[in-house]
View (cartoon, rainbow, N blue to C red):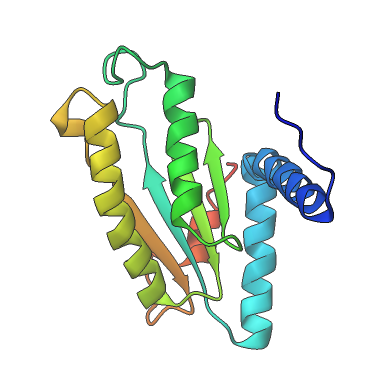
Length: 167
């Protein structure tokens, strides 16, 4: 039997884990995540800071035919989420809605930082998908980046994207 002392460090860690679980539940709701993104956009405009968002599209993965037989879809998504959480900063927000779209909000992150994250995720996820998905055709996960401020008035602005969330 392992006995764990109730130290302040252990209590802080337990509270932090509980808070992370609560935040994950909160931001899995698209409308709540949208409200948080809008709040961060207002803050970025007010204080002239950067904010970026990365979108990952999982809609091409079929839960029945693609995922390795030894795993079920929920187990796959839990592992996928854990991998993503370990790949981003603690201050970044992760939203997985219905298992089809993953959004990562990167506060105080310019375009270059979002690109660097996308490159790291592309490599990391390729290995993860090769281990867990049967068809090599589905090993690639499409990603898009949305930044504020943008250099042009294109469709890749955060505002234009979040306007579509929850519709």
